[in-house]
Image 1 (cartoon, rainbow, N blue to C red):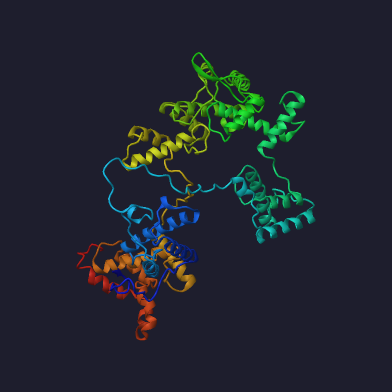
Image 2: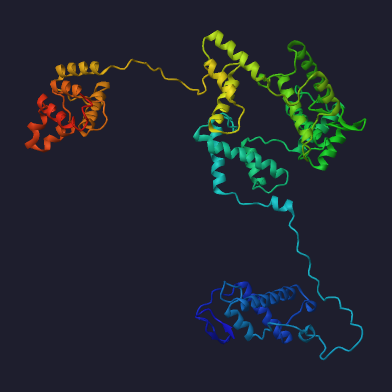
Length: 577
């Protein structure tokens, strides 16, 4: 029984489903026909690998095994995925008499004997009638040299390069040409040159001989390969007897040899390089020196190592002499690294090599040996320099000196001597105020405050300190405002006078409620005499209540104010009289 994926209803295997998801291919049909031919010849399809006599039967053996494994997966999960085995194939193979499970090889062999084996030693397995030839490996060179069809996009770019040559007379686009018109063409040409070099080295990068011929015919120049450059070195040595090529004779060859010398020196000093073993052997045999390992007193040193025609030790001694001259002039070896000179770069390199030496991590090698470190140490060279350290007392002496010279203690943070100290003090004082652990103490804070030290940096706005006006002065300002504008309704946002007027209204309301207030009966009478508006909110809301406009807009007279004051006075026990 087979389980179909239509509602999980069991159906007989000899009935085809409504839909077959994976119809048989032409190759499957051909192998199926071959199995029928084998059955017509031998009477069954149970062909075994030790019975094959031809290449066709060997392919049939593999096909039969694959059908059995596919059928097994089909039975385990015939609903979960699209298997190679389908119900159509199962039905046709069953009609052909295909056996899905084969346990006894002797039973299924066409030449096997019937019955059980006799006791005794087993027979030696006979040699197979047909031994299939191993699969032929693809030749890398043949795969790289195959004639690939050139795409239309590549031909279009080649045509654009031809037009560029017609206009400019060359196919070399300058590096400083960053125009949008030539941006894509410049990148394409650069890619072709890189692919050509990798293709010559044996990589499959899409470059073919046909493409290379078209580019060379157009006039594109490619960088020579490593083998071609090495052949030039061999030819030069055969002609001159040495390999000391100068840049005047051949700049390209001299530059290439300098690079190879450098890389070879790194390899001989235990560093990882891209040179192959064959290339290293060829360079050494032709006369490249690179760098050679020697042992002096048990310590590994690099003696006479040359990189690009420059002796490492000779150059090191030269720079060490310059460091000695620098110390004689300045009294120390702390060469500023920001100077950008050869000596500053050399000093930075020594400290960098020292860091690699003491790190102890694998892969980090240093050219700095024990003897050079000893010479630098004896000279007073600091491999780990630190800034000048000053005590608190020394810094405070400088701060007092600054105050005596400038009259204040507002030290800028960019001050050459005290700038870093000012930033440190402000940072520590901020931690001190937050209750964090810091170097600031109450004694130090008091000492700095005594000198007028500014703990909070930044621009301090200029503030004009003015003497506040009395109530009488503000009262006279209000009278002048009334003479100019005809009323005493001063807007609150019109300055100090507006704020004072608003404050008088607030204090008057508190005075009426019997609460403590700065308003007195005398002040209230004086304000009522000039027509002061004690309730501005009612005045501005009067436009919506027409019946009250005339009453509200009219200032309170003296009698009304005195009546209100007499109502409040008994409750205040005469505190305002």
